[in-house]
Image (tube, rainbow over all chains, first blue to last red; front, top):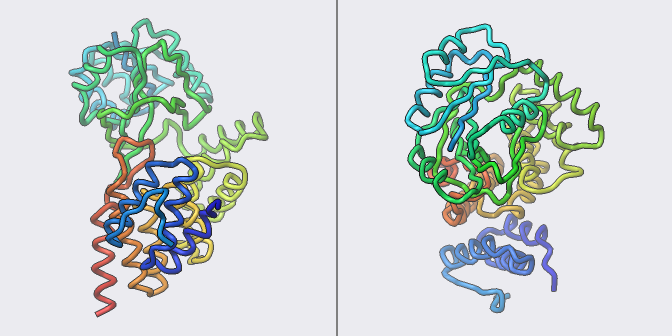
Amino acid sequence: MTIDPVSAILKVIENPLSKKGFQELLQYYTQTNRLQDAEAINYLLKVKFNAEYTNRHTEQ
Amino acid sequence: MLNIQIVTLNNDKTIKHTLESIKSIAGSVTVYDLGSTDQTLSICSSYKVKTIKGIFIDNISNIKNDLIEQNKKNWNFFIEPWEVLVSGGEDIKALVSNNPSAYKVQIIQNEVIGKETRLWHKTSNLKFENPIFEFVSCPDAKVSNIVLYNIGQSSLFDNEKQLEILKKWKIEQPLSAEPIYYEAFLHLANSNYNEFLACAESYLFKSSGMAATMLRFYYANIQLKVFDNLPKSSSAIAQCIIDNPKMAEFWCLLGDIYFRLTKFSKAIEFYNTGIILGSQRKLNDEWTINVKKYKDYPLAMIARCNDFLV
């Protein structure tokens, strides 16, 4: 499924305490091969939510 | 091996510092003067530089490209007469001993660090673009440790002359978005905010990429801080974040929007996100950096938010 980045960032803005929007941003950057941005979001998920994800393991 | 090139026009307040800062670099220095009527040439004469009295024309790129053509040395290094080399002199020596290549330097102005291609081997065949706000386009240029500090102005021309050149440029290239981009920043520098918004919207309608993202960032800033238009500011900054989530500047502005809305808990989250994601930026990337937005500013704002939350 192709991720809509606008929808993802709106989820982040709506609820910055939820992982959901950040996870979708991670998927978007992975899908679009923006690996440095994906790594940064992955780092954020690890630090902020004590969780780490890869492009094949995206928790819903 | 290296020729340092400077184009001057009435820069007697700063040129001495520029020349002092590059004195230790092994290489020749060429000053191309566009007709200074102040002490610029007199100051230059007390340094070991070659001075050329040039002809004033409304196209700085053409002037600089002529200098590149005339350069008999292998390497070009351009510095403005209001910039000083604050670090990286040794790096210049090392880089020009390496294989032919092109390098960006870091330029500090106020609290912002920009990156521009200023040092390159002649085999790179690089040229300046634009009649004003000239720059060298070289996406492959590596960011070096050479640091310049802006101690004065940012253009050889006053506002009136800059607008005149932009107007001429727009007539010559009516379909180009480039002059509109620079016109937007000129209006911003002159606090002509309505004109800035109009130019920014026109440019952003047909452009994308890093330059568009940075213009959108300033657009979001003005919408928030001058016009108090929170919806336009937030939708613009959301797009900026999508374009580059590692820019703490963008997250800080989102925090500022929620601070303005007195939603302090949310604002704290965005400031924190900026600190975390900003730490993942590589300092040698191509984007400008406002160093305060990576720690000092968000921490200060978080403290202010907490004061309200207590």
